[in-house]
Image (cartoon, rainbow, N blue to C red; front, side, top):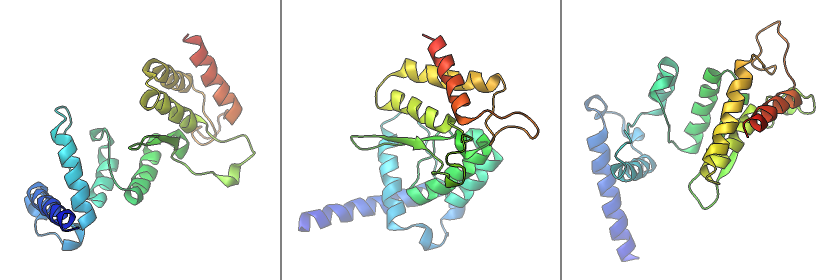
Length: 200
């Protein structure tokens, strides 16, 4: 137990030093509540991982600043790594940028098994009506192909099919312009499947 406490103390101390170095000068006087132990350990782990990856630029943002930056200039972000609650908030915000929650896939990675699912919930208000947007589920399957099954070419085909169907003007109700015809869930899914099949 003594060894664990010693190692943990050294780890936490290193995290405090790293956090102090990383914070921009104007934030060094920030309220202590922003530097929770969880934040420090999370930031340290990110730093340690990023050190070994040459082509990764690592920036630390407070969630309120990240939320604003996501609206002001969303293209500056390639990947956002955060804890669950902030991730839920930011992904809902990002969904609006994409047009609908029905457009966003997600992946929970890090263990032996990945979990892939749409960002949105179950949407019980439209259950059984055939109007749900299947794109998030389809793109989640593409992520499964890419990240868990190492089927890069197949993932590319699925993503390309989604893009082509959208470029041809097909839209489900959540993303269709007012007054235009909206495709149902099955129709949109069938259009994407047909395009995937045509690529083989």
